Length: 379
Image (tube, rainbow, N blue to C red; front, side, top):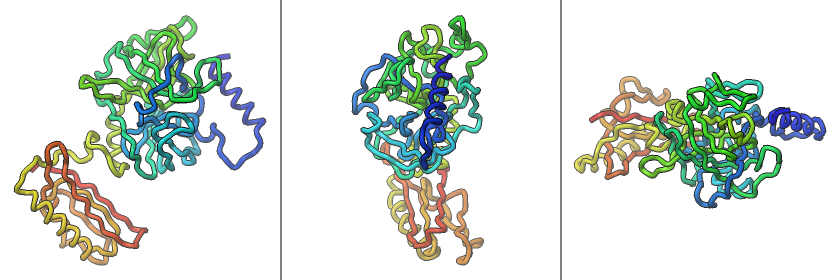
């Protein structure tokens, strides 16, 4: 009986012998047959990976924006809304922040077989209720990175071996080497072959006697780029066995779905980092428009209060040229209408910092909030 069958059988036995409860089981919360342990790793530094997250005790994840966690697609289960993600986790009981889960978006092309193998597009984006104060990890968008035989660091809190249920007291890290998808596809241990099973959304890693395995899928795989910056290149996904000398671990490759991650984060995040490109091409520093930026902000706030005082809204502007409202189409008895295109006054870039304007109308009308993110335009 292979590792997957043993785990599934044990889970079924536990479910049958457990008394009924109003709480969801782990199997209801997520798809639980997956990879998630660190084999032959070492204790991580308590302060080195503040972006590491846990989803209860069955999946890992990584903070990629103040209110966004990225985890594996197969970690999303029927009752995932009951999960409380922990950010800045060093153990299951030692973490910096705890949140409610607002939404979970699995990649629409996610797929797997019945043994929770051959997984493709294995990604889920979690929107938190609230924003973390912990540092987040930048995602990799370069399909040529990491290169073959490059060292990467894998994090996890799963069990410590293929034949044990023992879990570590603190976060574990292990350094593995990447391998090409072609070499990974040719891998075989005589009994199992990966031929035809490796997809462009997979990232293979292999180091003898070291691996990631059961109970922490979705954990981050981190590489250091040419500028010495840590970036997220993958997530723990699947594999046959643990630390097999001939079979690599198959992970989810972040760069393969970077466009989907960017688009989703821009759509749902309340504070997307600049590298997601949600507000591109801000105007360069120009002293003559600084005063207009300040005046423009005051005018916008006054206009919103006078014209739409009953509305509760928040607007974010990068560039502000032209008219904010289309007076010919707006009516005081109708919903607020905004004109796409040029906005009112130019906001400026000071050095490496962007100046943005937030306009907020306060109202007790909680049932009709409005929000519009204006994209900037070339001057």
